[in-house]
Image 1 (tube, rainbow, N blue to C red):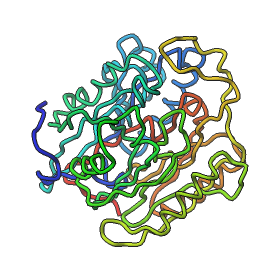
Image 2 (cartoon, rainbow, N blue to C red; image 1 turned 90 degrees about the vertical axis):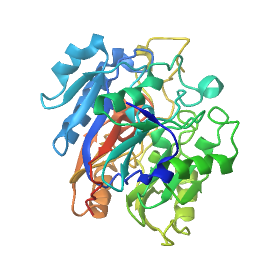
Image 3 (tube, rainbow, N blue to C red; image 1 turned 30 degrees about the vertical axis):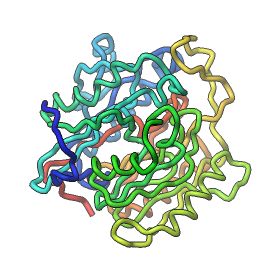
Length: 369
């Protein structure tokens, strides 16, 4: 489809909040043996479980390499659409486009630059050439015209929007040296406002995964509706997420959005015990991919959930706080069905449900509030 000039803001297009109605959800299929243990088979089963859970609420499309199509068909439900879409790994949130809605209800997208979370400075693998083409290929499949900011690297998991002019992100990620070192904080903020149609950017300081994504926001906080956010929270000073969660909670609790509303902040528990990587000896050693070691902290956050039409799909880790997380999220979303999916295998690879999914808004931009 056509690459558009100008900006979404100038053209009257905005990125809807995740809580607004979706047309469908996009995913990619994991297969690289130097990131996923046991040749990615356990991860494929976890991805299939996530796709199955989402498909109960809205259509799902999974992009799969040619070599994996038959395997994916054998594991995914028959009502999940499979398209041939090669990639270097399987993080659709970060590689795919950010979809936009116009005032007339039409759909466009933004295709950001992608360099595997830091390029040659501190990126996680090389090459990322196939990943960098995913967003435009999705736009071609969906026949959606797109904007492409010149020389601007950004991943979808690094920001959340409320659909009404407010963006939340982290300085740890967007100001990292591996993304846009040629741009100032003010210039980065201007790009966010121009291409997401926003008026205010809330900058939290840190995320919880400096070694993976340099601190994506979707493990820490996100909008559940305009004026309301979820934020991970713990008073256990020994928990690895303690400092970032406390900082984020207190900052958000004293912040107003683009409409001047003081944010209502909902606390969400962390795991009772940290989740650690295991089985990493079964990963194929490769000089082109950052190594994973047994005993390293897995970024296992309950905040990495996905809001879908009529539901919320929530990570579960076999932890004592799994049920508590589900009950807390159910209280935040009284009109949606909350579904937990066991996703330790996805956490072992560096992310979770929100990281591997990407919502495409319904035409018309109608919300579900």
